[in-house]
Image (cartoon, rainbow, N blue to C red; front, top):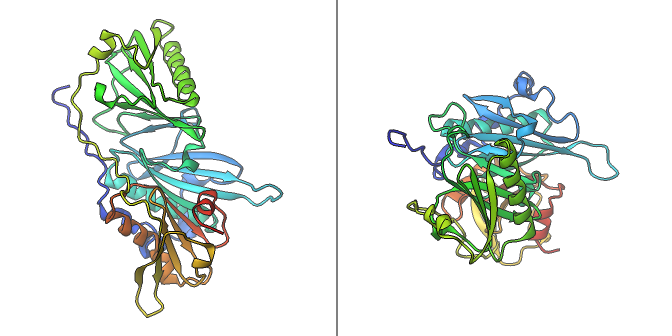
Amino acid sequence: MSGLIKPKEYDWKDSNLALFGSETEKNVKKESAQTEPAWKDAGKKVGLQIWRIVKFKVTAWPKEDYGKFYEGDSYIILNTYKEPGNDQLLYDVHFWIGRYSTQDEYGTAAYKTVELDTLLDDVPIQHREVQGYESDLFRSYFKTIQLLKGGADSGFRQVKPTEYRPRLLHFHGDKFGVCVKEIQRNRSVLDNSDVYILDLGLRLIQWNGSGSNKDERFNAMRYLKGIIEERCGKPQSEVLDDGAEDTEFLSYLDEQNEELHDFKAADRTVELFRLSDATGALNFSLEKSGVIRKSDFDTKDVFILDTKSEVFVWIGKQTTVSEKKNALAYAHSYLQRTDHPLVPVCCLSEGRSVKAFETAIAA
């Protein structure tokens, strides 16, 4: 591995995403969006569509690879659906930032998300997703989320499958979806509430934590069988339960840990902020903390609800142009100053129903 340059990790303090939702991006004309080849069939029928950003361009992601994401890339995900008894097409559009995605890539993804929203007449609910901190809604689209090393035109692509190198795969999730990602091979990372697969090329070991759930175990077993099929049935597999590790299994868990951040909020108090230009200048201030009710929202302003596990940007129907175009930028700027900057961000207009938002507020 000597001579390889370690990719730069996504810098959550980067101000580039502050442009998301700003006047610069809102000036994207619908005519311009209509000339984007990638949007030709976007949102025309119910279903999921995914695009990857490659050299500033939006490129269609193969349907057979839905659920697979490269850590070095950024993606746009559009879910088109209808509510029961209504024929109107509705949308959730997400831009997903890989851990090693470049500033150009996730900046382009954010920009193009606004463009797609414009094309679809501002009907979509917009979401920001960061690898490892995805919303339940995003995870619900996939039976399994597989995170792959490398990225588009990167110098750190995954080695060929035939050049087997030991790797440790981590399975974590629930009924909303299970995420699988490659992690460092270190015994200290083993969490008995999850499932792991040690891939030794021709030998596969599945380790089930004592507290792991059926979804994690099932998806790990299905993934393990998939590897065996890809390798023409050559690998031998076995399953170890928590406490039954063999010495060979442990001997491969010897890599040094890299510095990790969990970015979880220390204070779990729900907070509601108001963005208003009633005084003639934009003012962002704490409105209330604790129990937040529907009556706390004012149709004339923008509100940012921080549940500490997700942030909702609520735009009132009578919000001014200035408030609306700066809403997401203020949410991003606010998160930069917190201890939980990577949580999902959801932007919705007054009148739109989002289950997670409705759950977060009292009647």
